[in-house]
Length: 349
Image (cartoon, rainbow, N blue to C red):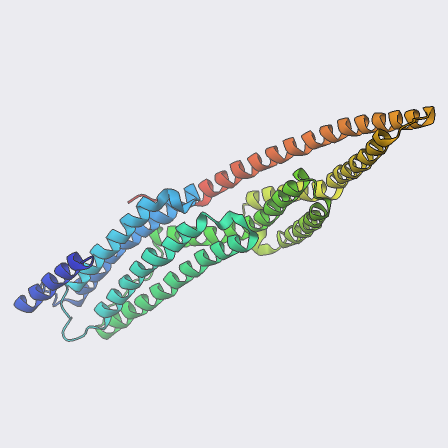
């Protein structure tokens, strides 16, 4: 029952073609090509609008309405081309285009739906974020390969009927290419940042629970991620995008914060936890003692004074780290958005 409207439209198209012999008069191969390529171009414009909105908003869930509109546009385009007749017994170009459009529909209906759903859990781990970004790349690659196939079919049709195609870069084509390159670049930089950000979250969680062993493991992992990321950012492919190094530099500053925190600040905080644990032992022993000597009291008071001084030092350092982290995260989010807004083409359809 869900497919009834689609089947009804398809049946109407087939009936219309069978009665008239052709949907319109397309004796001219150029007109026939335009009848196929024009609706397809409209469909591509909807896709570009979706890419642009997703790029500027980053989160796919926020532009879900546009994805559904793109699906409708793909369906409309498919019906238009199905309604066209076979050109002088040659169905190759028409069929290739219909297959391509159906493929696009499947991608937007299934793959992009998975992307939207995965977005909700992607930030739960590094593996899930990598899987999320990889799915984006694979989906884009599938669309690119499918587009190359239909372009070949168009060229073959043009060559067969002696049509000279003028190959030139259009503004729309350049925007599509820029959007694709930008998405790939920002994803590659983002995963470097995310690894450190996620591991810092694990470290903070362990510190809050005073699990020293887990905190030490997370600290070492954070240092490793930071060093790997700083090295990766020196590669030509990540150093800048179209000559703009802003995002890479912001990522580098974030990684330097994580590295400094893990190497210099966290050891001091962990040392305080050990001193606090030792003080609790001293306090417990003192409480259990029946007859306390003056030496016992003096030693205990000294331990209390050291503990109080340690608490003050710890609180100051903890506040400094937290404030610096918040500032770093704000800078990252602000600069990442500014970078994407600057380079992602704006496109509305």
